[in-house]
Image (cartoon, rainbow, N blue to C red; front, side):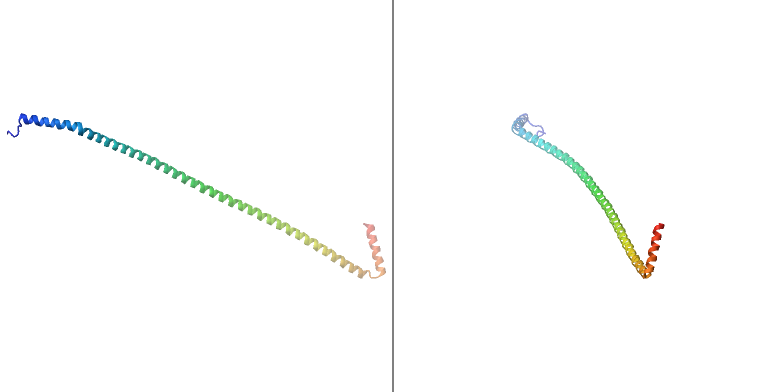
Length: 164
């Protein structure tokens, strides 16, 4: 049992050695160790804060990217709509212009046909008139071949003129 209970001298020297080691460690080791631990702790806290900041920035950039993507889709839709409206307007204008041109061509053709018809009618009338004059001339020459027939015809014309 003597081994379990230390002597007072051994206890004193052990306590003294412990206090000296504790003093030396406190003065030279614990300060730098605690300082290194605090620096490491602050470095880790800064890294975590920076990571949180980067994470927040990434979320913000992601939301901005999504809004830009939505805006780009809307602009694309708007541009496609405007292009379709422009295409439809151009097609309708071209159709209207084609109708106008076709109507103008039809009207010009109708007028040209009418003019040609009138010219042909005039020519036919002139031809008929010339033929009638020639026929009448030939008939009159044949009937008025003699002097007596000519004087009778002149007398008949004079009588008709007086009656009118």
